[in-house]
Image (cartoon, rainbow, N blue to C red):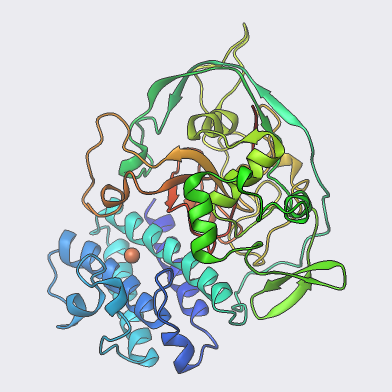
Length: 424
Ligand SMILES: [Fe+2]
């Protein structure tokens, strides 16, 4: 366990520094938008968070920087003021990241660290890594150059059709055990599920384009009241990053334009757009219990759902590239038909990896919820966010498992999120 932890600390830090690469000083600050952080602030915040929890809170160390809390405490510093802080430059911020990493690795190596908090700090960094990557897409910066990349994929096509999942009592959430879980996954509790049919793959870009070409963004009847308000307020008349040129769709991929890839999942879509597409197509979003049952459930021999749950759609072995597109091996989605070896017991593909998947469900606590040490992780966001499941191509493999709950407000289009649907 200690070697794995040390490896994860070093791996996350290497990625963090790669994500800051080749950004100019103005780009490191970036525009003042509610959906992004200044990249320079985010870098320092990652180091501060790890220092705060692993070195200061658990190991009782004195702060490394006198101004750390005043600069980087996300719970205390209002988002829109982060551009006005006297942030250290990239060289000084990098030195801080390295210094914290060195202290944490030394503690881990002599087994003096609190494993849960080291894990938390790594996962926190992983979440910011993904956010820093999609911030570069949001702002039209060049794609970061990441080590350990792989050649681009060779297709896979589409995967139409539904999988049938039997009903029964499903245990939603994480079961008690040795591994790391977040407070919002605790604990598995029975929920009744009616039998349902869920698409084997996420909705593709080509299928979403049909909605756009059918006037989907102009037709009130496909949108909920909140969705229509969002559409009118933002002026959204088509998907983010799409443009029609010469009768074909193009999409902006970081700082360049590429022809739309028809069989890749629809991505950078808000919950409201996903909801409108579903209404247009006569479908619906899965609840998070349905999503988790499709991913973790197994058929019982006599019918219904087995009480056994899989940690990953394909079983209990950790993710591998042949099963799930994770870890930023390349920073784009792949065709929804690829990676058949990652199928769930019911034949759903890519439930983990490729794109996050919106669910119909509001982000709420499970019964008996109590916050863990990092109290601001889940609790402030209950009731205002929607649950997403699965993980994207930029999510590190260590942060993807069937019961993991991600959450965003329904207006967000900047995360690499798509959706799959259920038969109504
Ligand atoms: Fe954070």
